[in-house]
Length: 484
Image (cartoon, rainbow, N blue to C red; front, side, top):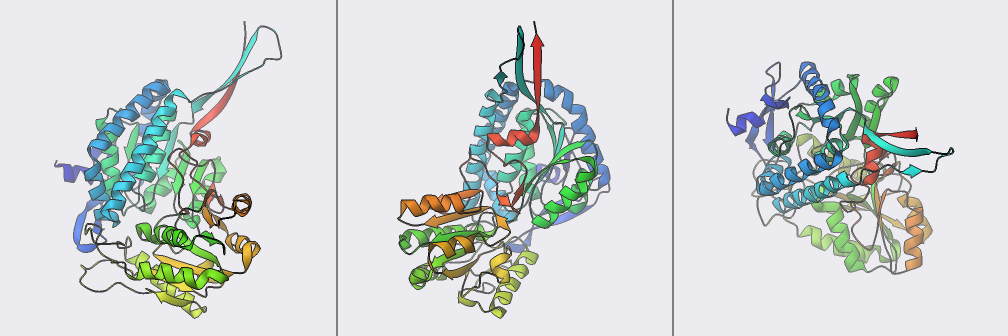
């Protein structure tokens, strides 16, 4: 079997195998739909059963390894990924659509997260505590929860799977990874890297497909926890479905992120941050700047700066070095973005730049012009609901208090930023903004590779990812008292 054919299969118990039914799904390049990346396994219940059985069988030996030994295996996986970084970046761009330089940055971030997580093998600590009785030693320690299901999205097809796989394995859990059906190749390359680094068969399994394998993972009573990144609707369904058996869930959900610009802000710096946050990765990230909440005294000047940059952007394939914005991931996402802009116009918003499909000398793909909308009402649909595309909504406010109120006036709370030259206002904003990842005078996207990644309100449930707090998902606390 060729490398290409093998990577289109599932990876179960250390073997590449097609789906039990033989069914496949085509995977298309969003920048050029004539380019078929491959036909990947479309898995069903039998495949998930086999993967979970493999994870259950591998669990005792993997649990018995020390965290230090597991961390060393993760380090070796990082070395393999580093050696294959260009292959991984090319795969990300080809099947997800983001610019090649953005894909390379994603691989780099994934490696940073892996380096941090591997080092935690020497810090997966409990604590010693005073005993209430003489000649007694009391302490706490962690143990893995067991088999976990990892359900990941398409927008960061190596970083997000890796920031679930790495802590799952380091903690002593065995895992079944179910990636998005839109980015199966990158997931296969990632799992292959872990296998080539020496991770034993059954410890990390890969099941490709869409809805069915995800539902089966949630349903299987042998799966102790589900870590999911995706929409609020699907995350809620996972949580509800698992509730009768007390399934542990870690959910990273939607965002409707605000960047607040006060009247005293450095507008040039703010404009650069807005463009990066709103249109980087074609706006397809949970922490993207979706709303610009700006003091109306500086709105026109700031919008003019943003529009001048965005209006000159070239939309094109991610492999073209001259492209500034790549395609969105598929036809459904493109139509949803265009529909959101149309609905916003019906509700009174005005398009300053963009607003439609990108045209010109482009291959057949899912291209949209970067879009800036002004006169957006805080309660309008586009100001409340996630678009997940290259669309920025500008909301005018009068002063700090209204800015904070509008920024917090959504059900989500993933990321937020504020631009001001007043330190007092900056720190007050940090205390009052309802978001999990906060920034001052810088782009309002994710955090560093060793800081908690997660939100508040409807943006997240359970412990955050990446940081030391993640162990509260993958492990159980135990306390012990030893009399001697």
